[in-house]
Each structure stands twice: as C-alpha cells, then as structure tokens.
Image (tube, rainbow, N blue to C red; front, top):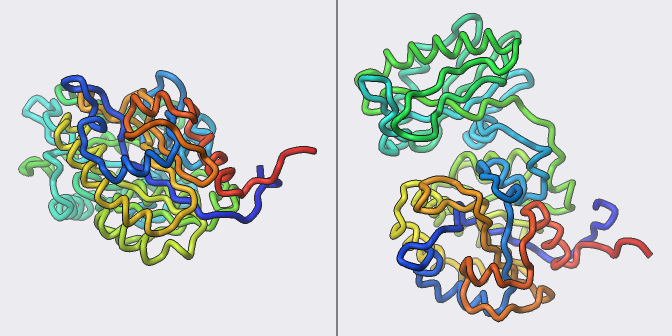
Length: 393
C-alpha cells in the first residue's frame, strides 16, 4: 500500500471500548441511550459493522486494537504484558518478559472470589506493588521487578538467562475457580515456570492480610517487531488514552502519546489543544467496556450518554474524516468480551449518507459499509481522506 500513499485530509478514530451490546427488555445499550449529538452525526454519515478478528472469535483488547490500527491480528499476536508495560512507561529489553498482573481475592480454599479485588484504587494497588517489590527480587536466578499500573492492574518484568514467555496464564477468567499454575508450554520454559510458581507462593504469604490477597497473571510477552503505524500509513499520529494498556498499544505502533493522562476529560482537552499538529488521532474511552464487564446495563447506557455530550467538542476539531466504533463488543449479559461485531460510524465528505437516524447495532447492520474486518478500516479512512492514489492504469 505504501506506493499508493499521498498527503490528504486529517482523520480521527474514536474507540468506545466494548461498545457493542445485547438487548435487555428488547433494546441494546446503544438503543436505550439518549444520544442527540451522535444522532445528528449519524444522519450525515454511513454505518457498518466491524469484525475484530473473524466470525465467532472473541478478541482480547490487544489484537482487537491492532486490527483497528490496520495490522492483521492473526499475524501480530502481541501479549498484553508488553502493552501494559509500555503504558506505564516501563521499558522491556530484548530477551525480557513482561506480564500483566491483576490483584484479586481468593477464599480460604484458594478459589478466586473476585478477579479484580473490588477494582481497588490505584493508590491501594501501588502500595501492594511496593510490598511485593520489597520482598521479592530474584528467584531461581530470575530477576523479578514489579511496577504499578491503574486500579487492580500492575506489571511484572522478568529478566535473566533462558527465560521464556511460553507459559500457561494463571487467570481462570471467571470467579469460582482456582488460579491455574504457570505451567510450561514448551521445554525451555521450565525454569521460568518454576520461578513464577515460587513467586506466587511468596506473594500469597505477603498479601495474606490484604483485601487483595493474591495475584493473577496473563499476557506473558517478549518485545515484538512491528512496522510503525506512521511509516506504514504515512500518518503523523497521536494516541490519546488514559488507561495504560491502550497508551501502550499506541506507543507500540509508533504513535506519539501523552504519558500522564488521567481521564477522558483530560484527553478531550489535549485533543483540542494538539489536534492540528497531527494527520491522525486515536482517541480511547474505557468506561463502556468496564460497565459491560460488570454486567451493568444501566451504567453502560449512562457512559454512552456521557460520551455523547463530548461529540460537539470532537467535531469542533474539524477532522475531515471521523470514525466511531468499538474495539470489540462487551455485552452486559456475558460480562466479558464477545464475538459479536461492532457498530461503525464513518463521516466524510465522500463517504455518502445512509438512511439511518441513530447509531445502533440494528441500524449499522443495514449500513452502506456492510460488514468488514477491522484491519480493513484504516485503508477505508485513508481513501476518504484522499490519501490513496489510484491502483494500476
């Protein structure tokens, strides 16, 4: 595609995390929400549905976002640990392994009763990370460093000779089950498995009197090699995300990031201040996903309505191409990511207009764009920004 790239209009990709939903009393969260500003934009836009990976596949946030950024998620399978590490400004060297950690709560039988320990505050989590750091430094020759993240999340970085990222994740993904052991998935992962198993035993002792009394691990990853987004698509790019992992995703693909954003409101202020400096802006909103994971239909409706109030401020930034979608669906009924496609809104002078009056799943299913893979979105945005030359004679 590089030979087709040229200068053109500016683009914003606004991702409402976990946007797609399922009906409750006959309506989805998007259908229940009062969204006058999105409605006005919808009347001047076209709709469609995005498939994050492929039919029936439930994506993690990493592959779902990479797909949105134009990378085939089946080719670039990047562990969440690297993304979390980058998001909290932790450098991971070649040969090291980064792990996404969750503080959780287990009962006296070792069964997980709360995977997020009540979504403890960032301040509480930071103190727990400090306790782990002071008491665990090296096991079986593997150096172990802990770094605080946001709320219940944190990062573990392993370094040493012969360490591996090919281990079983310990997070059972549901309450009511015991954590898995970090079993090796290949021969040379035995040392790392042994070190992490001992680390978990130590962590249980250190945290035994805390509300968050254990840890779960997922997303083991070494640093990947990936072509930078600005080079791949010819776009000077800015990523605006206030959750570390999504900031890490933007950083991973070479976007400029703002390291200390704390809220969506701060992201909007930076957007208004800096948007003219960039060809492409990725803006992320997290709370729709959180509400879906908590199974809170009403909360997700309110978060969609909260976003709607900021649509005029986004439009004032005068992007010629506007895309609004989710990275995946997080239906309240499942309390988790799902395989359902995500509604997509595309606005530009050249996109055309649907007959839709509202941005909802049902309207998007009837939309002009149809159903496409998420990694096909960026080329579509480039075309609408007049950034692609004609292919062939």
